[in-house]
Image 1 (cartoon, rainbow, N blue to C red):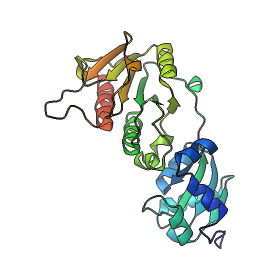
Image 2: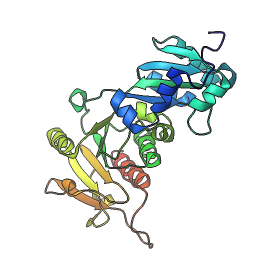
Image 3: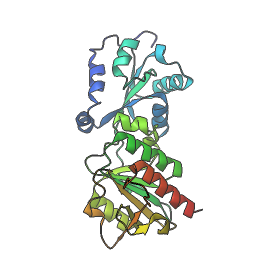
Image 4: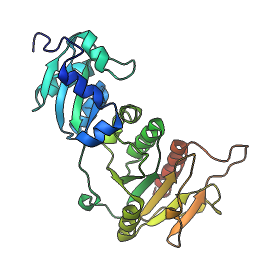
Length: 266
């Protein structure tokens, strides 16, 4: 791979990769884009299957990017060298680190997950903004969460912005896409306490006991949680709000609640 194998922005493999910026193409092909050295390193470390790699040697300025380029060459993926002009077309946003890949969407099922005693689980319902989802993933990774369930059609785990906002932790966190009914049935099977973050809940979050197996459930900022997350098996909790705003960003709420659970567990 001493000379660029792709010199045209109209190359069929380049155009096929660009289509993966659209959610519809990602769902149809069960593939997604990973753009960035750190994100690609974390994906490879997590065993994500890479189908196609694009490398621009001139843009691989960091040691991390050069490490990824070498690692891609060791995989079974087709790896093409491209010119800077082609890579700038492929790169997402204004970041061009010289390495990008098309990967297979991980096929994760809750049935294969083995939980420890007293697991800490988070559930996100219809969190649509990639930046918020990525920020929650970073917190989930930081606290060492045992599972993160995402429900609702609006949540897009492998949106390029989600991957970037998560700093690649979407690959290290045990994250599962599912629906509310399946999530509730699975949580009941695990015999964990279910705590839902609601602005109208009567109990403060500091009054909840997260020391045993717990699932913390959060909804979107616009709509909150649906009625699927109400019932005798669910405990509503809230954060105190002393100003004019009646809610926090969902990623901030997730951080407060997950770290409170960690604090209680010592």
